[in-house]
Amino acid sequence: QVQLQQWGAGLLKPSETLSLTCAVYGGSFSGYYWTWIRQPPGKGLEWIGEINHSGITTYSKSLSSRVSISADTSKNQFSLKLTSVTAADTAVYYCASGPDRAKTGYWGQGTLVTVSS
Amino acid sequence: DVVMTQSPDSLAVSLGERATINCKSSQSVLYSPNNENYLAWFQQKPGQPPKLLIYWASTRESGVPDRFSGGGSETDFTLTISSLQAEDVAVYYCQQYYSAPHTFGQGTKLEIK
Image 1 (cartoon, each protein chain N blue to C red):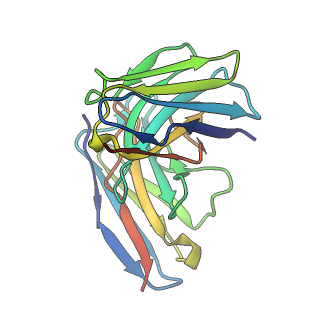
Image 2: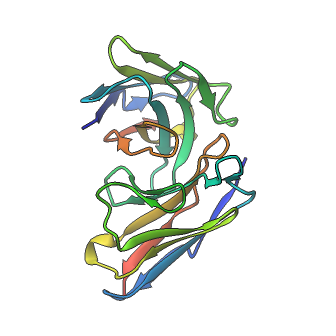
């Protein structure tokens, strides 16, 4: 049973860099797709981007200039960095994964990141 | 980007009755070489991450009750709950994974009438 546990700073100032990490337990890290999704308070889901088992990344066009997703296969972890944050980046950030894009069946618990001066 | 539009935004259904949620994509998400629709449905309850219910438009995820079913093709899809239970109160999202970004619908809030 795959479980995802995520962590990172929950309060940032404008212009700082958001950094979150997601650890994978109980399953193979290889062969999967690893995704970050966010949800502003009271709103819907926004796909941020993914990294696949070959290390290839794909990002949302609206965030591509500020976002970076990486993986450390030796630690079974993948990470999200989002630079130059503003209040508009305030959201619950989720890591998620699955054996292919169709089956994003594993989710982290979510991390609320608040951007405020 | 593929725009996903759900209807209605909210829905109230009596216990035991059928609930139907619609999802329309701005372009076809049917991949002809494998004849699969790249469409998933998620359920989200307050304070929880989303839960995968359906993928490939109509394949139920393991452990999901068979009262949940998905249908449709190309640009028009439905999620049906055949007999609403109290635990089905949630927000439901469709998502296309045909092309990046893998966009979600705005969500449909399902409540008990």
